[in-house]
Length: 514
Image (tube, rainbow, N blue to C red; front, top):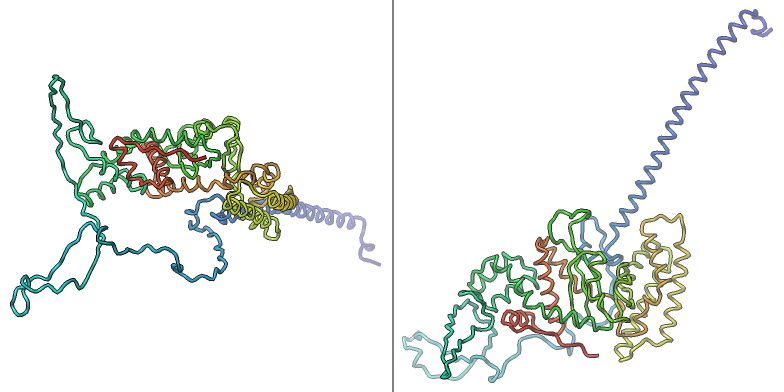
């Protein structure tokens, strides 16, 4: 007999009750464990979600750190920032040439000047007594045994000149008074045009802060202008050059192709205006290889309507990046050439994002080849790219775009930079004419590099001096900068332009030849 069969009815009932109680306790333990498991599962799910978020954030940060001037629109000045991955240096193909100056290349060393080219010619003789006691002044001249030419600048020292303007009476009774010299103002004592030109040149061209300009002028000339006087010269020069600035703007409106760009600039109060996140403005440039015009404002459509682009003739070509304001109908009926330098940088980023795909490299190679062929055709004096070469390049571009779209049009592709790459490919597909307009007329540059070059000094100035707290003087500064940039493009010395402006003779750029 088993143990259970030997139990009485009462004992079996008691045993059943004990087992039921024990089962209830176990059920409670299981319930608590299930609750704990559910809590732990929820916590694990939360941890997994946080982990995925952190992974996504880490990937985003890695992507941002990997951005540099070779794969994005970031300026080269940021390439050496903390934690920044510098661009990979591409080794140039060996050219077979040796280092240094090449045979036949023109030299820049000082040359010996002939007699009629000299400013001064000095004969030098030994002086003093000889060891024998005789005076060398009475020695016999044996002729020239050594010749030496020295190029030197004169020691600059401020000179003070008083001008007395006389009045004379003509025999007819009319009185005539002599005019003050060129550049003279209405005061009794002033600095002349040369010193003013030097001060503005240092301020605008070399970004020297006002107090250092004062130090330089004091050390080099002996003059001691005040900081307030030096700063006031920006306004005086801008007023004198206002006519030239207007002429430059007018000449740019007559151009067939105009490069445009804008860059943020720290200007005005450091506290953001109401409704703004940052206290900054934007410096806009419209330029060609002969003219430069700056406009200080913001990035609103209101400022864009004030730029030179709004005054271009219908059918003119604006060369720019893909910022949407440039495509606005408010700027008029313009054709567009989208900057391929920006595209090539974006494709370099796409190649890093999709390292196993070949389409980013193929796209970049096709664009570079078209640019190279266009440069060659322009050198040969042609006006457009040969259709055979253009068609061959376009077939390669279209094929690479199709492959790229097939590789990137995935909803689950959430890697950082994927959307930007997709938008670029869609733009290459939908705006093919705007990317390749330079192949139809070789007067159109394929990039807006000229605009970027003209804007780059503003970033150097910002790195040196920081915020320009007075917006009015900042506008004056870049009006002057645009005039001097135009002068340099015409091989005119900027100091000559500034001296003329302070002397009452404003330089005006010539019109470009058709």
